[in-house]
Figure 1 (cartoon, rainbow, N blue to C red):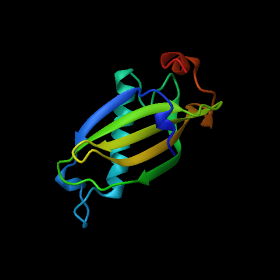
Figure 2: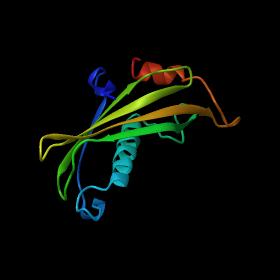
Figure 3: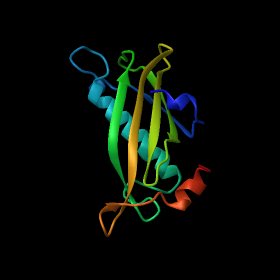
Figure 4: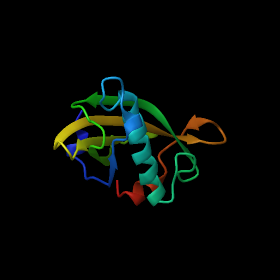
Length: 138
């Protein structure tokens, strides 16, 4: 899983590992990676005045999630989360995340979320809105 290296980075977010992000092994808990990518995705959408609840009159839902853990992160490590978009289909696309530990200069994780557009009234998947494609020139 390395589609992030093949597509342009659309958003970068930096965050330090907090003390409550650690597990019993004293390193970043695997479940906190989910929080990190969810937060980066929400911030990315927000800068475009979008959200998962309202994305061009559609809702975004997660259809699939994959995380490859590569190296440990520790308290106060600075993490850089890079986000790209790819793998467009009729009604879905992927957000890919590359999480780099800037403190250790190591790749911490790669993640991918397949997102779908849902017609709010019908509750069914729908085509990716043209406005979304135009916004990111996809």
